Amino acid sequence: MKERLKGQPGRRAPGRPAGASGDGARPTIKAVAAAAGVSTATVSQAVNGTGRISEGTRRRVLAAAAELGWSPSASATALRRARTRTIALVVRRPTDVLGADPHFSELITGLEGQLAPRGYGLLLHLVPDLAEESALYERLVAEGRIDGAVLTDARADDPRPALLKGLGLPAVLLGAPDPAAPVPGVGLGQQDAGVREAVAHLLRLGHRRIAYVAGPADLVHSGVRRAAFEQALAEAGLRPAAVRHTDFTEEAAVTVTAELLARPDRPTALVFPNDSMAVCGMGAAQRAGLRVPEDVSVVGYDNLPLGRWLHPRLTTVDQQVQRVGAAAALTLLDGCGEQVPAPLLDGRPRLVVRESSGPAPAGRS
Image (cartoon, rainbow, N blue to C red; front, side, top):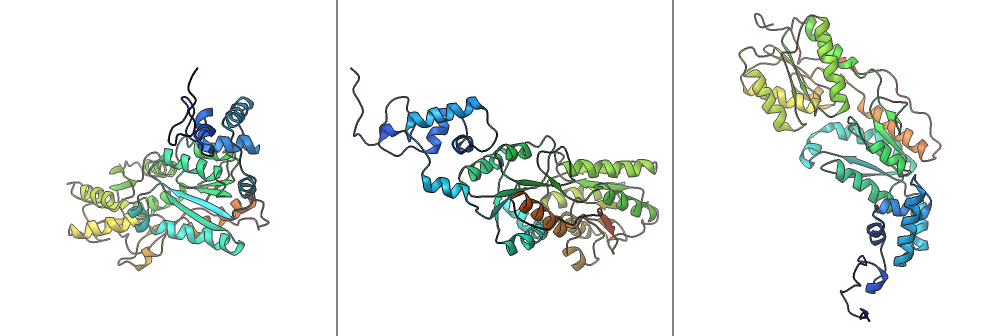
């Protein structure tokens, strides 16, 4: 006869997950998830009847919970079903990049302008990659800590909208609306318009060697804007002087600018994916002994306040970041069952011409 393990702290019966009733501790949702081979979010969905999971998965979870003697406490269940009035904003950026990029300050201002008056708060998380972001959503939903989420940085084959729809969590994706997407998209239409205006503006100024510094290649807006840039040049019978994909760090902006401006056939104009990188590029050009815009023109993207504080002031594309944030908040609040006015978001990205763009230098167009 096998000896029963009883009353021995720190030991458990072979084959039983930690947290099972046999080790004297109260079983946990993590133990149930491990026994059933699912995530804690799936356990929560199975016992609460939420989300979209198969009947077979639900039965497997419930069987594992019964075997371990686990059940959610009444108070925990009530807490999960109550409104938290909290919205998650998860950003895949290093801390130093987020702190240096005013884009997110503008976005948060727009979000909070609609959330705060209605008693909602914003829960900000920084994550390094997609796996961490997905795991975070599952944990936040399983713990009942959020009522919805704002998704940033849409990527090709992005799994997050389907994940959040499957978790039963209201969400919005920042970017051009897509009726076929699992969650609503919130953003200005004609996402290519701003870049096309920037190219047309530079061509009118006599520039023919125009380089584009793009963001990460897997971002949807990077692809849209790059295609618009190349097409606008092609329609004028030109090709890009260069296209460089980088991350959004200050170091990347400075490095790529220095590399482009050190070429014998250096570009006479640079277009950047955001205002922060454009500012870094202007600094790199000036440290190289070049004048902006006399020797090289610079165009940014976002129309953040910092562009108006520089000398020369930054020519940039206005994508109405605050208004997009406000519209995203209203769309999400509506998905959470709140009575809110319909978001007013129309128009398209438009070029704002200031002093950092000027005529192409003589003999170098």
